[in-house]
Length: 304
Image (cartoon, rainbow, N blue to C red; front, side, top):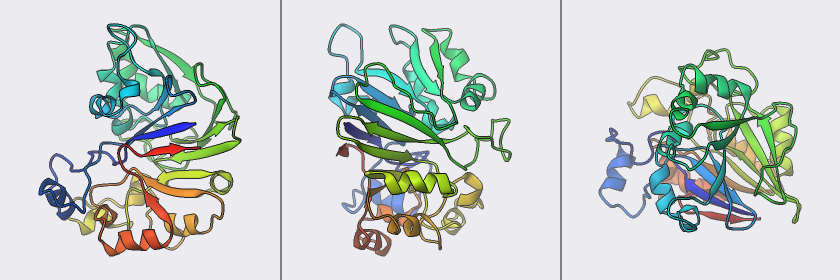
């Protein structure tokens, strides 16, 4: 199974269009310690031809251009993307669907009922797509029931409810329900190996820890270093926990959790532009390196 990281940044990407903080200044100035990042998305394939897209970021056009297997190649207009899985209804995970509106048939989109509700009410992208080719919605269970997707041979997908936060336009904001945000166990039945993908993770619940512990590769929320990082950076007064993200450095945070895992390869994704780990020479980045925790980057390939 081949996993390609199309985007490793959080919402807004890196550099963010309106941010003049130290990190964004560094990448704009061409400092080699910083790498530009598109907004979070991955794609998965069992045969290298047909690809399942996880989340459609606003940067989807650039992401397709950066990865030839997704580009048109078989007829005058087509794509290597066969289906789309949406983990939540956040702007940075869904607005790319609008750029994909001119598909030659309705998109097969897999998401939970609560995400579907958001995408047809508070943020009605699915409704807009009905004016083009439309959407074939496949409801994803929140009961951790595995399922298959056509053209993803030998891959089993299991959605895992996560405790995070629904977006501002969701009726579930501050009152989340199972399915507002899910992670995924993605298992290759030929090798028996699996990836656990959770770009938005607010709490390490017991059932989530079991998936982390038993994964071969963990691709997990790396949004912020500290819970008050946004206010420290002078960006806003929101805590990471209020936005549904568990920070890396606090007791019981992402780093402590990853360090307790013996089996998996450990990789961070969905990294906010304020996070000091974006500076590859920072003390925070060196600390991750010393703990064998990787930071994903656009174009990263993971083979399991």
